[in-house]
Amino acid sequence: MADIFQEVDEEVRREQFKKLWQRYGNYIIAACVLVVVGVGAWRGYEWWESKRAAEAGAAFEQAVTLAEAGKREEAAAAFAKLANDGTAGYRVLARLREAAELASSDRAAAIKAYEEIAADRSAGQVIQDLATIRAGYLQVDTSTYGEMRARLEPLTGPERAFRHSARELLALSAWKGGDMGAARQWADLIIGDPQTPPAARSRAEVLSELIAASGKG
Image 1 (cartoon, rainbow, N blue to C red):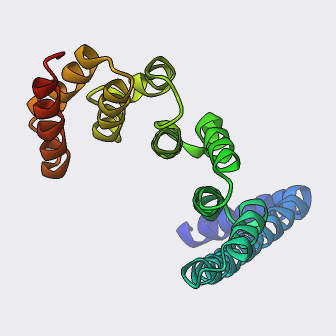
Image 2: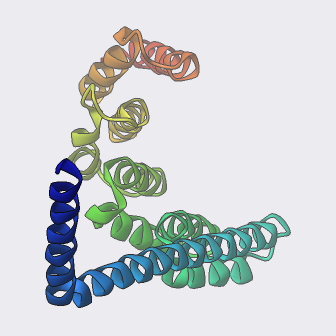
């Protein structure tokens, strides 16, 4: 008797499954197809991204080779092309290198390039700060201390990656501008920070001695 009930249950289940398949079978097949296509598309995208990254890396290396060979204009053009066509990471690196190449022949254009990077939030805070510092090195001989302070003081906070360079530039700018009080302030901050790199501390100590010798600090 139990076997009969079991056979009836199996038959009922088969009928239920058959009805469900007739009703939803096409949807199930479509979902399976979508999964397969989606996985294939993702794999294809990953391959394409890897290919682009490899091509961008090779282009960057070629541009660096041109720069090291002294072919500044060709290198700048190669970096500019990569800045437009490369992958995200290499675009940022290429823009920085393009600006660096410009610095040897066109200081104003290099400063402008660095300032554009510094203003680009998509580059990230560290890259923006680096671009600001690079521009600062090019501007320290021609800009007033007030101008340098407006650009660089936000970078001197304890959490900023290039705070030591920003402080050095401000100390140098103040000294060049004859503001010995400000120069002393920045030099003392550099010397007193235990995280200051040894070379930067040594330069600040020399500057501090020069300020003391001038009798104006």
